[in-house]
Length: 194
Length: 213
Image (cartoon, rainbow over all chains, first blue to last red; front, side, top):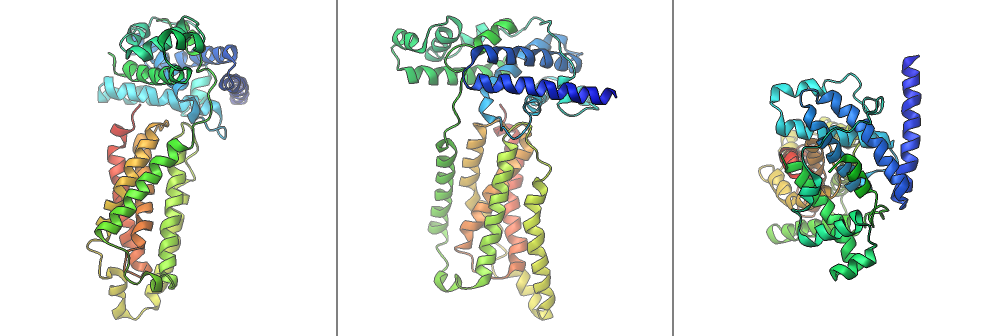
């Protein structure tokens, strides 16, 4: 009985997130924002349970996963559930972090999971954000000038691509490329930052 | 930066909507890798001297189709392992099926052959260097495949690297067919496979380091 309701819950989460995600890919910023917010709550609960020994790292890994999800959106193959795609990325980021930071004998515990599928991620949610230790804003400052400025103008200050292009004396296409490359570089910096 | 601010940043600006990944990002590197492999084969080994006659033999085509089928299966596996959450349970079937089929055919050939001809069918004349040459020809294709994969999102890096190596090895086997003097499918079923599995092992070894993101 409980299993059935869990399956229903996962299915409704899938439908909701999938709809928001596709609207986002089509350019609907509000839908995309709601997608990221909902995903963040699931990521947080999932990671908090598994990183109980490193509670300070949870929010950093939530942010790293969100950035990875954003950067890798095109790798989503519409043939599989979106929840499975998100779970695979979250799990990858968790394992990657554990490999790099935790001692080997600590590794099994967080991954020892009876539900080794996406229901492990989407069965719970946690909206209470902790403090991130690695500051994305500070890491942003370490990017190459063009990439940093393109991101700051178009994604933080709310300028249009045309306005940013005029301000930075770059073409509109170059702005878009700089934003894209900048976020990829940011993901690498975030991953390597202590 | 708070997570809420990060979400605001990600969900605003010009990159909210995304267009599909251009095909040239995949096609160009792979075509380059294939071309390099062909050039390497022509420069180091040269075409089979009697290719026109050999191409009339069914054994030549069985060899070629076997390698090409494995290349397709390897490509399929590479594609699946480059997308997070994609189903991978059927992959062993795709990769192993053609091999089992060829082994059955090879067993029949061995059983029907005269006992003192069997050793020749297995060893041929080139077993010493055939696998190494296939592995060598696979290197440019492997490099191209790993490069393409780095732009995607593999989450099981060792498996993904192995699949890339397998696909590259099978493509190299297709290229090597144009030189290879061996016509026995018993030979192909063993030594070609070693040549294909060598880059697969290499891919598995370097995958976690090369493909991490």
